Structure formats: C-alpha cells, structure tokens
Image 1 (tube, protein in one colour):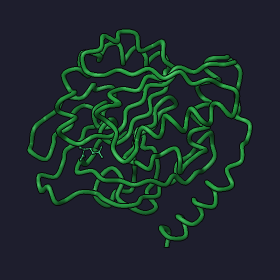
Image 2 (cartoon, protein in one colour):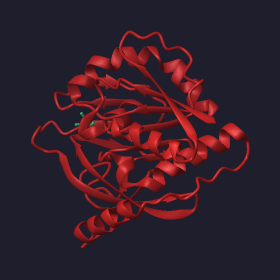
Image 3 (tube, rainbow, N blue to C red):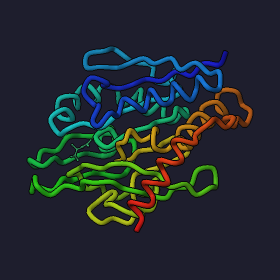
Length: 246
Ligand code: GLN
C-alpha cells in the first residue's frame, strides 16, 4: 500500500472553521485510492528539523493572537521549511497559515508578525477592527490546465499584497484584499488561500490535484486519482453556485 506523509503544523492553534477537516478529507480520499495518509504534527516546542521527509505540510487559519503566540516557534523552522519547499514538498495553507509564510503580517493593532518569507507577498490588516472580508466566496482557478471553481468562506482582516501568482480569479466575495480580483497564492507545490470551508470538502477536485502531485513526485510516474462517487458533493456545489454566482 502506498503511503503519504503529512505534517500538520499547530493543529491545536490553527483550526478556524473546521480547517482540520482538510486533513480528514485528504485521508478519506487517499484511502479510497488505497493510499495510507500518515499524519504527524508540529506544535510549539517540538524539535521538528526534517520537514523534507513529509509529502505535504499543512497549516490552517488562526486569529491574530494565535499567530502572534506561535510566530517565534515558526521562525525557528525557517531553514528546514524552505528546504522542504525547494525539495518539492506540497504546502497547503489556509488564511492565517497563508499569511505567516509570506514576508510579514501586520495585525489590526499595528503589530508586525514576521513571516517565513518563503514568498514575496505580505499582509496588512485594516486597523479598523470592524472592517473585515467576511462571507462566502467563489474563485476560478486552473488545475492541470482545467478551469475549476473553488468555493469557501472567508473571514480576514488581513489584506494580502504583492501576490505574484494568485490561486484564482474572484467570481464572488473579496479575495486577497477588499473587492480584489485575485485570491490566494499558487505554485506547482503550493496552494495558499483565504478559503475555509473546510476547503477540500467543498472542492474535492482540489484534493485530488494535491494527491496527484504528491503521488507523481513519489513514484516518478504520472499519477491520476481514479474517480470516486462525488455525486453529493457535486449537487452541493451546484446549489452553492446558484446561490452565490448571480
Ligand atoms: N488573523 C488573520 C486575519 O484576520 C487570519 C484570520 C483567519 O485565519 N481566518 O486576517
């Protein structure tokens, strides 16, 4: 049986709106393809020094306070995280996690939390705490050359700028900033997004895209997940599109 290794960073702190559900979805969809997902975690104080052994590194979203608390610990992982990213480990990051791998996050109190500076983008929160990007959101991305609509829920004060390769085009909702055209950040081994949901339950093709990437990298042969019954998920998606894309 094939095995994929996932490192869940700060599962006890970065878990807004059921973000940990993304790990469950990856596990479920892997199992349907006879792949075992082995999940490890990194929490504050852990001495994780080899991030490259993982196929996927996952960070969920969190409030400003949690982001502040874990920032020092995260910075200690900087070199090892960069090595894994350069090695081709897949990085999936939601909201607070997305912000923390950029240059910095300046929170709503004006405090600057340094990021891992893996990417060029940076995030500044509105100092008016009542002004946040909140609500359902639909974006259009491209997965392996095919257009795919991604649905989620956003709630962030942070406005992310200097995004060189966005995850998608906003069809409804805000995105990287208030009324933005673009959402998130994407590379071949990176999806960073403001979309909670959890993201992968509403967007099963995105989960399979990640599994395909990981398995292709592992085996050296092009891997394509065999289709599974997503009838319920697709019906749910159609209802949401009807409601949100008017
Ligand atoms: N605290 C960050 C912000 O408000 C991230 C929030 C989140 O992860 N939903 O922008």
